[in-house]
Amino acid sequence: MSTATHSLPRTIGAHAVLLTYTAIALFPVILVILNSFKSRAGIFGAPLTPPTPKTFDLIGYTTVIGQGDFIHYFQNSLVVTVASLFFVLLFGAMAAFALSEYRFRGNTMMGLYLALGIMIPIRLGTVAILQLMVATGLVNTLTALILVYTAQGLPLAIFILSEFMKQVSDDLKNAGRIDGLSEYTIFFRLVLPLVRPSMATVAVFTMIPIWNDLWFPLILAPSEETKTVTLGAQLFLGQFVTNWNAILAALSLAILPVLILYVIFSRQLIRGITSGAVK
Amino acid sequence: MAAEPRPKRPIRWHIAVFLAPAVLVYTAIMILPLAGTLQLSLFRNIEQSQVFVGLSNFRMLFGDPNWSVNFWNALRNNVWFFIIHMLVQNPIGVLLAALLSSPRLRFAAFYRTAIFVPTILSFVIVGFAWKLILSPIWGVAPHLMDFVGLKSFFTPWLGKEQYALTALSLVSVWQFVGIPMMLIYAALLSIPDEVIEAAECDGVTGMAQFWKIKLPLILPSIGIISILTFVGNFNAFDLIYTAQGALAGPNYSTDILGTFLYRAFFGFQLQVGDPNMGAAIATMMFLIILGGVCVYLFLVQTRLRRYQF
Image (tube, rainbow over the protein chains, first blue to last red):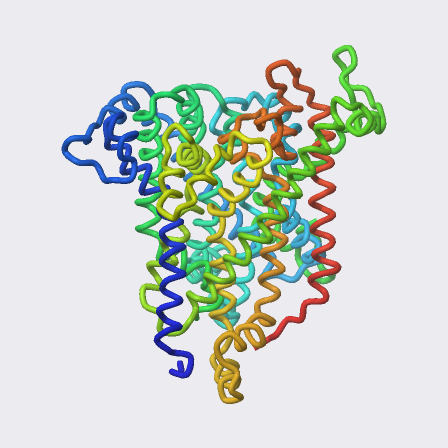
């Protein structure tokens, strides 16, 4: 990099803008978390100050933990997300491999057909999806959600993964073929480990919308048994409109797991998004 | 289709095996229901059985004032929702990305991580947190505005018909600004150093360099972001639902196509749910999104010049 673009006032300006925006991005999150540790008087009296010994109170958390079945909702969300993610990655990688590795009649058509779902949201098919789930008796099961999210995640996964699989060296695969490996072994033992970084990218892209989705849990699985954490939080917040301690505590409990996971995986996520660029 | 043999070659079953699971799940859960929904919009439930009625659901959607007023209102609101995203979210995203990609910027990783935080939060959290912040009961917003002497401008935005939609659009912008930022950032990083160095040799630096060299090179990414924003906005539902409920209050002023579809399909309070009308609205959304995607693919993308390095 040259130093010609490096000047002090410009650097200060850039930091000022970025810091301001960072503050805007983080302020609501920090505000909610700080206030969740306060008493009611503290929340309303001094919303912008951190909890002091005088205003510190865990009443919100005790209410939430006593009332809502959040652990259970959390498990549901986890099962749905992990299972969908597994199927999206496995099926997506298999299809991407078929499309990028072999020439066969209808290859391009198949690619376009699978790419259709990137642009057309699955939500528009909700009316018929619900009918399908009712007909197959899958309403109010986690299976219904897993199926829908797998279908939802596949198009983008196939698209991204086939781009990456084209970059895997042909020589390597052909060497494997000469050594008598089957096509399946080549895929699972040679290609999959090589595209692992792009699998991580796809995983994050797939995971966030699934974890945060409200539409399908609301429509396909609203029962107490199958509620996801997003739907559970929505209903809980609706019930406790006037109990600010409980609301702020519930919000914080919903934010924290995602935030912790994000801080751990943010390097991978950002490297994934920018991976086309940073080689 | 997948395993069709080429002449003089054995059937390559492994291709079919690799493609089958994805194609089956995708077709069964996504394509067929989508087609089924389009088909349902042409039927009506008369005496417990589905009867083909042609376009009469659409005639009702556009002709019956009970439906058409709500539909046009939702569509208008949705267009405004989209305009705000295009005018606010994407320019801010480009600006942040341009700043982040400046060479030798310290703490770039920290900024990137922090600005992306809202994007990973669920709509429920975002909707509620902003509802609390903008609430006159809590008073955080007027308190903050007092710092900069703007307290007199405060109104309960989410509760006023003329402001609620704009306020929610801005909340959505706040949440999703990380996506254009990241994609543009990636595009900016992929510009080779030689191009930038050549520009510097010719004395093109700073702002001029951004406008004349970098912006033309990232235009394809801006195109992709625009179409992603379009599809996302005309399919939005969650934020409005969590912040304002299915009735998209006050007085339907924040109603967009997603919430309108939800009410039509499931019914709400006095209205009885009607899957066929829901399907008709979903069909309209499908056509709108398809139209947008076609405009992008045939008009925008073909005119954008792509540079291969």
